Image 1: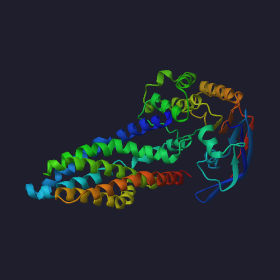
Image 2 (image 1 turned 180 degrees about the horizontal axis):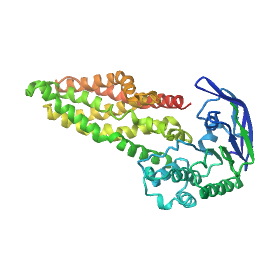
Image 3 (image 1 turned 120 degrees about the horizontal axis):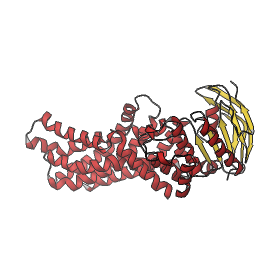
Image 4 (image 1 turned 180 degrees about the vertical axis):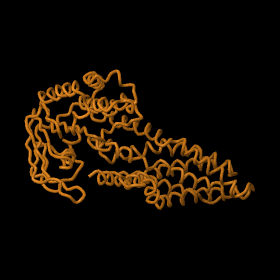
Length: 200
Length: 221
């Protein structure tokens, strides 16, 4: 169980260009950090580095005293622009597969679909969903399989006002349950207790 | 276990639908088997001599068809990222993908291979051996093909690159399988060729996933 995310002097280089360096962060259970910065400043790359998908040029990323491979394999969710949903499959197939893949139980899949008001959409192909509905489906995967660390890449942007509020309440509940959130945002993140700005 | 069974179901359905899945491979295969007598001429003894070899080569080419999409779609839509965030090692995930590819194209082609060979005039007594060769060869083609598909991730015209990477590696199974079939037809010892084909397929299953996982990690980071 991840209770801490610790970045020390992290630096990431992409395509020969140093995106950022010297980034440090100490996030504890129950805290949310808003990651801000102009386009191209490396917000997505930082999230992907925490998820272990991008190599660090320098610095370290730690998850308390957990082994990083275990922490990443069982302790975190990543929701970004590339949501991994197959447009030709139904929302139900995708939700079921990803929940089982991340260790969710059948009952919690149903609960997640209800919490994000997806029940009536589950039999549609993913390609029929609007951008906001599709994002809700991507977010439902996180609720279906509880994992402490949420890495979110502009989670609110395709959502309407009602669902921005609705998902903010779900984030609040996650934090109250001892979760951690690191979210790249352009608009203010209502539940943020910390902020980290990347400069170019 | 629940994770793996979910993944196997997903990969097989995706492979089944990928670029037409088995139908395109089978259609291509039927096309080659039909064109051959049209191009070479319908003389029975001439065709019968090359029937098994031609069926075998056509099978090799048909199994190239949907390789390109094996990793590419998951790479482009972000699913590959999420597949990594699991206790299941990426090597095993890659192996399951290849298995899905084999079930969706290799296995249907293995059923079609004896029919094509007999249609071209091969001795029907060869069919069980042709089926076995196609099944084993298909396994090797799927796991070797996966390496090519993973290595060409992120490249434009990935399909072409996959074929160029993979074809030289298809040479040994083509030789072993073709040799076994020719020897069997000629009444010579043929088990050696099958044994080599099986060994090559086993090596591909064992080592292919390591190469695929490394290539996927490299493409993502």
